[in-house]
Length: 112
Image (cartoon, rainbow, N blue to C red; front, side, top):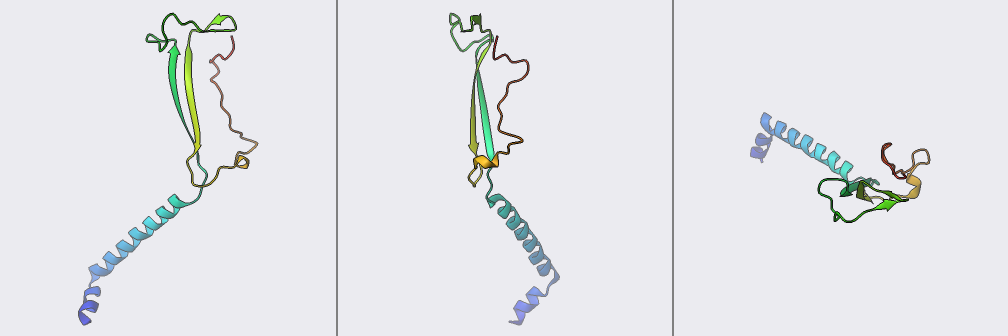
């Protein structure tokens, strides 16, 4: 039994136990933050240019018009929105002062 006490009375053993305790404490805090229940809205966007570049993805004989005007550039965009958190995302979580909004750049045309 005295051999065990002598082993733990060595200076480096106490330091090693302290360092291991600090590492486990940091790991515990990190694990708590990661596992905390939160709603986390996420999105992913992918675009495919159909008309308006050297290598169009539509045949050359396809012409698209909008309100009688030929469209010279057409892009198909897929926007996927999901909850990447562990908590349910409620409609009340979106505040009235900053609602969910999808908009176009100023120079993009949606109308002729």
